[in-house]
Image (cartoon, rainbow, N blue to C red; front, side, top):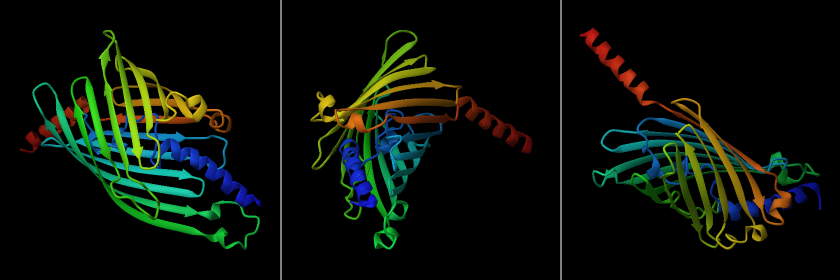
Length: 317
């Protein structure tokens, strides 16, 4: 087996593990902070514009390891509407995907107790690129050494989100149409969480995320985050397939530790590290790292801008 074929075999082995865990969809430890990635109905839930970013680096030390970068925008609009934008780059080996999505949502208030039902729509495009020129070939005359494939695939998705003061539940299909070119299957997401005060300063937020697609076991993430006065947080996330939920040490899974701090009223930063479970996957996979950044336009800043505009109007008059 030449060098090229050996690398392809190894890559496919790792891809097999990755697809079982992520089921063709992106997977983040900070999913509870960036739920619009899989459910457009989460857009515009906060009072002000937010800009967040996640940098996910997996299998450090492995050539061609998965690297994902994302930038997300979310903003409330008038008349109970919200809008959001997603720009994502996902690379693994010779495969490079660039996603862009526009999210719109309508938040329906159900009563005076802050109960609401949100209906979201996602319009997306995926620039899918395969470039075998980035791999090493023993024979450069091999026609595969010059192969490149490029596809642009449009899609549509939707999501629902129900929320109370303490409880939230969500269901979504972010990419409704299945695509034969990229072999992308329809995925179903179910998420939820609950917030409970432990004391005047501590709040715990257990949450879950289920992902289901055809011909694959259900993927399950269960997390618990503890917040201290909205200043910093720490928690743990456990992920596995339905079949290996209680036997991850045998069939594979992952455990992640998360922490973060709110630097000021506008900026937050978080970090997580993940370790694989299972006899084989843990032995061949290095830890994965994830960095989470968030900027929120504070209410005071928004009011200041509005007041400035009002004063300028008075002066002009």
